[in-house]
Length: 155
Image (cartoon, one colour):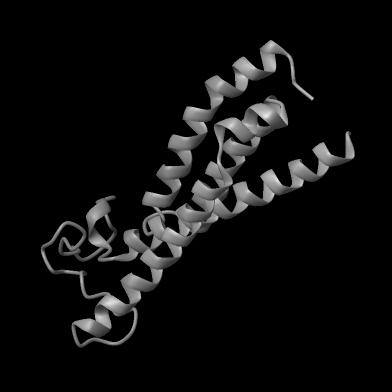
C-alpha cells in the first residue's frame, strides 16, 4: 500500500534530519547519553519512516537487503577488529590503546568536566560507529522482512 504524496514528501524531508541526528547520537556517545545502539536505532527509525511511506515494491528497489546484511556484518567486523587491535599491540582485549595517544581520537583529557571535545575517547567512537552501523543495518533488515510478510498476506 502506498501512502499519500504528503506523507511521502514529509518522509523524504524528515529522513535527512533523522539520519544526521542518529549519527550525532552515535558520535557523541562517550560524552552524552546515547551511543552506538541508540543512534543506530534512531537511524533505523528514519529508514522505517521511508519504508512505511512507500509501497513494498518501491522500498525493495530503493533498499537492498544484501547491502544491509553487508553493513551489519561490517559493523560486527569493525567492532571485533577494534577489540583485537589491542591484543595485536600487546594489550588486553578491548584495551583503549588510542586514549591519550595524540592521534585522531586520542587527545589528552584535561582534568575536570570534558568541554565536549569529540576526540578524547580513544577508540570508543570507533566502537560506537561499529555498533551504530550494525544496529542500523539489523533493525532495517528486520523491518523489511516484516514488510515482506505483510506483502505476501496482501494486507
